Image: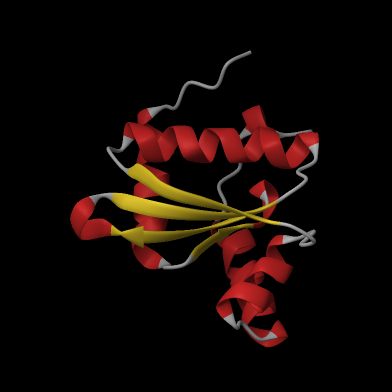
Length: 118
């Protein structure tokens, strides 16, 4: 079934992209950098996504496009297997920074039965 964002999905995405820059999506194997003034973003993504990661990545991109953002570049990071590695290797995050961000992300993540089992 194709993903169709709800107003709640779009509001949640909008609120979260304004809080964090870069915005990491571990479940989607990606990190996003935003230029909110021009409604643009750059994507850094692991090269070989699992089906689960791809099933999360696609709705994220869909939500951003529905919000009026344009993707200006996509960097596929060869040899990187996780979003944590992306943050460490490309954005100089420490392991403590990553752990803190993951805990905060899990705490703020809404329960949505559409995404169970992905």
